[in-house]
Image (cartoon, rainbow, N blue to C red; front, side):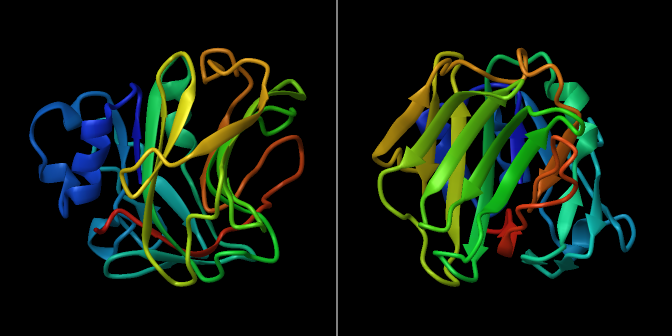
Length: 231
C-alpha cells in the first residue's frame, strides 16, 4: 500500500503500476510519500509490526492477517492492519493518492470489503475505498453523517483470485479512480462536495487496511482476499 499527501499524475500512476520495486523508483514518486507498506514478510519488524519504508515510520500493526512472502492475506472475518499512525501526516491535506494491489477471493463478495479506510472512531465520518457486493469499486467520503461524495466504477473491475492494481487520486477538485493504471469509466452517485478530503474531515483518527472502524461500530467491513505492493 502506498499513500501520498499529493495528487499523482496519470503518468505517475502508470509508473507505479509498471514498477516491480516502487521504493527504488527515482524522481517524483518519493515526493509526498507518507506510507509505503509492502505487506511482505521481509518488511516486518516483528510478528505484528509491518514496516513503513518512508522516513515517517508510519508502521502498521497486524491483527490476524497472514503475512506472506509477497502479499498479505485477510480472511474477510476479522483480519486487518491498523495504520492509525498515518492520520497525523494526512490530516491537513487537500490532495492525495492511494495505491494498492488487491486480489479478492470473490470479485462479487457476500459482504462489502474495505480496502483502505480512514474514519472517526466515535463519529460518523469516513473516507474509504471499498469493494461492493456488486463487484463495483467505490470511494466514499462522509462528514458528520452527511455524504460528501460517492464515486463508483461503472462496471465491476475485478475477477476472482486475480491481482488488480487500484489507485485513487484526489486532485483538490475531485477524485479519480484508476484500475491497472487506467482511469476507467466512473460516475458520482452523490456529489455534494467532490473536493472533500482530510483537511475538512477533522474527526478522522483511525486508519485501516482491510476493514473499517468508525462511528462506534468497531472493526467491520472486512476485505476477503490479499493485498500487496508486489507487482
